[in-house]
Image (cartoon, rainbow, N blue to C red; front, side, top):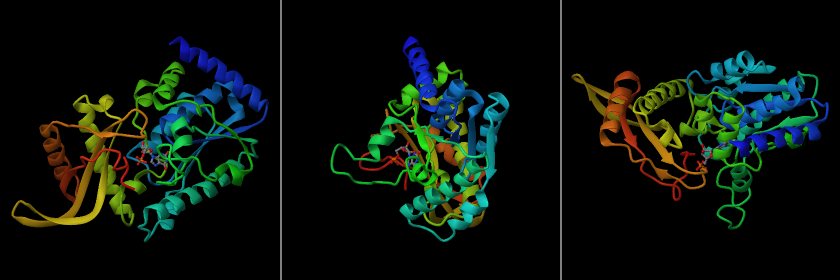
Length: 319
Ligand code: XMP
């Protein structure tokens, strides 16, 4: 794609012009946006870039390991990977309000990120994978008055706090363009085509209090759901698909015994940019088979429901 090739060359020049020979820190989330930003910046300035990956304990199954493997081993990009899951889980203990969760995670993330970034001896620039829709959605909704629906995790207070200048090479792009740029940069297709994943991670897919046990149940169920979607060849037709563990237990029956376990909701939507979305019309067979697998394989879940709400009026995430 020559357009993306041109964009890439231009972006590399812009980054070089902006940064000069200064050091840059980039926070990796494991998602497509920050990954593409990191690889692009690395192409521009090489080892002047250090990436920092904070494992908040809110990642999906195997995700933290994948990030480390891809960046450190495959791309040879200097990477600081910190497992801070205990700090996040402790800070979230007993918290049920969605905005409080977001604020706690956002605030702690800044502290922890700042701490690990300082260990590199100080950088002048902070790189972020901010996209055009992130810029808009944090300012206004549907062109109306400025209303915050959800505090976004990646356009928060990091820059002010760290007194660093920002490098945001994706600020003019939509998601599909970021993916095209990622392909242009040679990122693996399976990585570039990944569904978006929110900064606060599984915390906002676990309504009510977050516990280690609930996260473990959610991780297992979510992995089975995505495995089913991949097996049926549906992954690329869907914008985002994930499981939500509800803070509700219901009665069920297994063998000749009564069960009393959690309800799991499945969500899948199609969308162009995440601003509006339609629920994905799975065949009933698929839903039935997936529910059977999850209930059979995941201890702690005895009922599965499918979310048929579009955005608006729903949001994509449940919190
Ligand atoms: P909602 O739930 O607002 O989500 O319809 C729209 C898109 O944004 C993602 N999302 C986030 N992404 N930090 C992010 O980087 C966040 O705090 C955040 N909250 C929601 C969501 O997954 C969907 O793709």
